[in-house]
Image 1: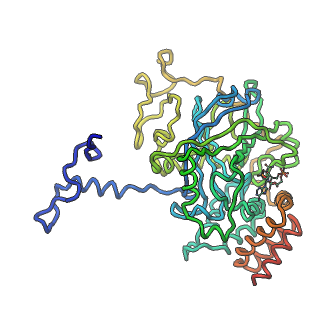
Image 2: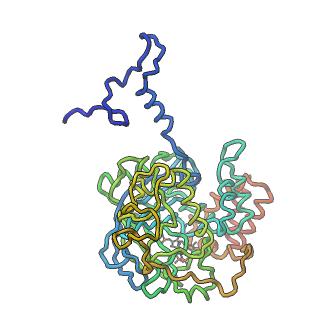
Image 3: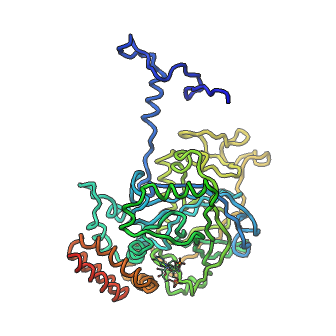
Length: 480
Ligand code: NDP
């Protein structure tokens, strides 16, 4: 193989990369060390702000293969025609810890999929849990602060974690999943993924269906206990995925949907847009639509996994959002985060670039590398549309989003909602060992909370299932 010559970032060959230029062997350095200055200046700029949540991530490429034609439900090109294959990038993550935290935190796992469809990128920015701790985005910063390190000591603070949960029973369902045996997956391959939010599909007749996406692991659910987790390699989940793909053992998820009509939604006893609730399977069975397989590792972790920019607002024709309040806030917040971390032109970074042509009149800005302005015209409407200048096409218009019949614009408290039954349903699905593990995991954190927070939590467990409360209370007494 011929020798590759080291160059500056401007491409000039470098003669000596070991010695800076100095006045004599003992120094000082001279001002013509511009190669050294470039090296140091770039090094100083190697970091970008890490994500406030989901900072620690692992990503890989793969293929989504459609097995069931969904053209009855959607105009989306990637969901029409069985056998259709779409390239994807999937980023897994923990949520609370920084980039150098452990893969084995008791924490939800991010499960974010970018589908590079022929009609643009569709991002499904989900988790490994079907629900979340909140159903109103105004609580998101408070919630995340309460689960992060104490602002004074910079140490984990279980008392704050439970202080928040004691005041917010809407977290009970997700907190029950988190404290259950499934709270620490053995690896990213051994867990399910969920859209968690309700999204929608709409067809050529303008009929909208509400949809929840499920990705069922084909590797089986495997978990570790809290005791096992502290002994795990902190990078174990990342290593597991990279190694599996490298040896050709490609992980797979069966892709399944729950589908609800608009009229079912209007009369269903559960608010279908409440992110703290599932749609029970017996009411809305899973429909298998395809398979997702991961089969290629990244070439450059920073360029791909660190700079990948998922946004719930990346929707394609035939796929829409829903009134879910958390989703609505995420439609704005994710793009905002990417502009902060990666600049306004984050979609020009190769990992984020759609695989289909981009034609629009956005131009310039920091780090603009693309030339997407056709025909020398940079505004719309213009007189060049017949010569190829981009123009909108009404056939891609989304049908109107329904509103409740008597909708008042104001803050709507959801405090009185039932946040207990589904946590109780989950408790009842668990076997004896799982119930005991749940109680153990809760008690080991709850013991650090104030007496008042402990009592409020016990009341919540009681409302879910009295056996749930009894088990937690017994474990608390054992520890005291
Ligand atoms: P079903 O009785 O039909 O099925 C129970 C579901 O619970 C299965 O999907 C199972 O996953 C899952 N599960 C079992 N243990 C745990 C755990 N520790 N953490 C998270 N999920 C677990 O469910 P229903 O639809 O009647 O709902 C009952 C409860 O099941 C819900 O309140 C919810 O907490 C939970 N659940 C429901 C889901 C839904 O979309 N309906 C999705 C996931 C959980 P698996 O398939 O791997 O066995």
